[in-house]
Length: 463
Image 1 (cartoon, rainbow, N blue to C red):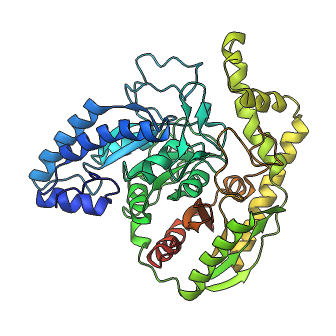
Image 2 (tube, rainbow, N blue to C red):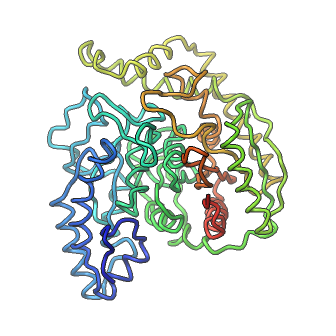
Image 3 (cartoon, rainbow, N blue to C red):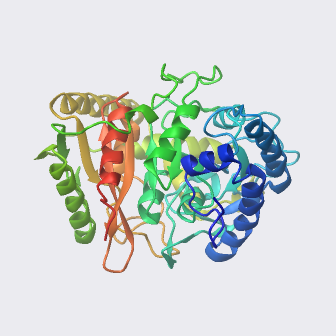
């Protein structure tokens, strides 16, 4: 089992495990290739990795190789390359949040919970992936690192804020790519780059520090690889007050072979007044027909929800206002102008605005709970448009600093804490990927994965 001419690009966890077990492939060989390929990917797609830990990765690969040779691997992730979004602490790595205002120094002294779980599983940590400054927007560019380009069209965005992780997945650099999602930051780059991305139920994967909207999850080329990663990331960490880990050791991967015949699927081509681009809508509708062919019961049904936009503005901008308020004037002047505008607008919110936002969030969550009593999953477009042109933060007709206006398909389910995944479902006429979003009731992550895996097997991404 020797690598192809393009090295180990796109190898799955299962294929790597087979090679490691038989001795045909070494974790050291894979780590060397991945470190070199990371630099090549940066050259092709702009900044995808902001830091490559080549020597550390090689040392971890040698330790993994010894375990595989002794037939004592730590599990399926042992020796598998992994990337980490430049938002999570990795001991000794230069965590700068892709901002000119941060000087990393010696780097963090401790690993964030997802990183700690990967180390325990023997994964080979390759480097940090690019994000916008403080992960504030849904495209990936920053004054510090420049732009991250879409692998399907260099004039288009990779999406954000986990754009670097999505490109790393699409390019086949690593099967494991850890990212975060507070408004669509996993699912939108997954849709733009044509890969699978999932935010599990809020609190399933521990984070520290933790935020009230942020879900931690995977970006991967295959549903099975994402599920294997979630099996590990879902292990508990007492530092996160929100953490509600699953009890099963294989809580995610055990769902992949489930039959979905008879599943009650609601299809909503629009949500809260947001309409998808016609090409996007057609591709998602074709994906829904795949579900029908697999035996699911389809009903076109949009949940009746309070408008989440104002709620999103209150919740999302408030945290950034506090972050920028802690800076001096010189540092604040270096911040992305759009982020400054977002933080400044938060100053207008009153205590009554905040109270109403909490009340609306509760009503939204309650409405979705009632909706999921009648339906097992909800399918929508992931993003209303294909990948944005470089230099744009939002589609035409939306304010450049307003995330919540065009991310209704994704942001709504951060407010409600539901599990939601984006699966590629074909291309536009211009060759840009389209993502279909699969949303489940809270804690029913297994069903979301089962639907995604069934669609993947059925070839939903075929042009």
